[in-house]
Length: 411
Ligand SMILES: *Cc1c(COP(=O)(O)O)cnc(C)c1O
Image (tube, rainbow, N blue to C red; front, top):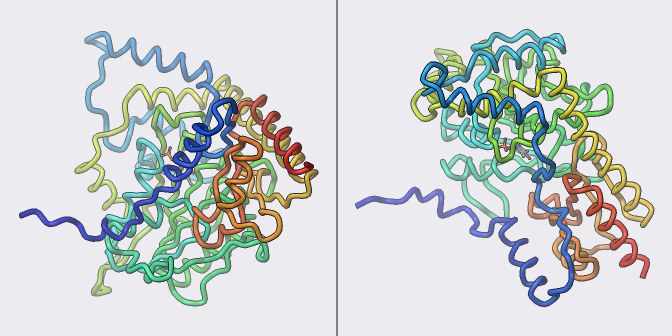
């Protein structure tokens, strides 16, 4: 008799985006003539850039000939890509990494979700609130999150990011074993200045805390003084794992490629406290057992974004999305709404007017303007009273959505 993993039964059935889809579909049935504009789901809309397409075509052709065909690749990823990452993403910022510290993957969701396997199930965890749901749910699945009471998990320290603290989480007053940080942040769209991030690294050094740093939106940073990598902070190599992804950087949500950095200096302790173990080694062991690499074609595609043409082309797309963010922020502010984020991230975090709750505002926006947003409360208790709008749409849709919101709110 096979027994189920009971921790899975603790997960809530209602997946946020499934709930939204259900409500949007109900609206479409009752309003067949309204064209719904979605500023909801965080997926890109613009095609892959020409440099990436050319690299993929070339890689496909290589697969067609016996002499250039590629079978299983190295579990950590091909050297050509790891070397490009080290040179362009790190060396250019004065960070020296060894290629054995970089693990190519099929996207940041896999690794942020799986990384918990190499540490004990009973470590305590800390998360910012609101939060990308993967961090909590993946810990619920192995029992690390504890039990759910009044909407909060017993073994999770929630660090609220609110209007009052400028969406900068307060450092816990107690020791936490593992902390997830995502900057620039999804969903609030806010970034963490270098001095703030330094406080976190220092906390981790003092408390022997492991920081899991998700930098999926690093490419959207436009202001100076915002770290692109946690390793820009002294001492971070001893305490932090960094996750990067080509999904938002280069439109790879359907291609699938990203990477994780685990410095050799990063260690965790055995339960008897006698030995410190390199996490890089454990992750390599895990990957060699459970992962057979990202496709050669995807890795060649990723390599192409580091060429001069590739860099220019992906920057153009990012600028396009950030142009949307500017248009949206301006329009919404003009309508008297309070808007946060959108300067170093493709998300706008919009305060609902009055005391309207997230879901209520979501429905008002849908029924009055035919525009879909994401209710902030879906990302955690501190997201109540906010909605998230994404800048990933087409420019025309984005303008049209703002016009509709104007008509609705001014009416
Ligand atoms: C989109 C996103 C990712 C990237 O996920 P992939 O699996 O690489 O597509 C990672 N973290 C956050 C917070 C995201 O929003």
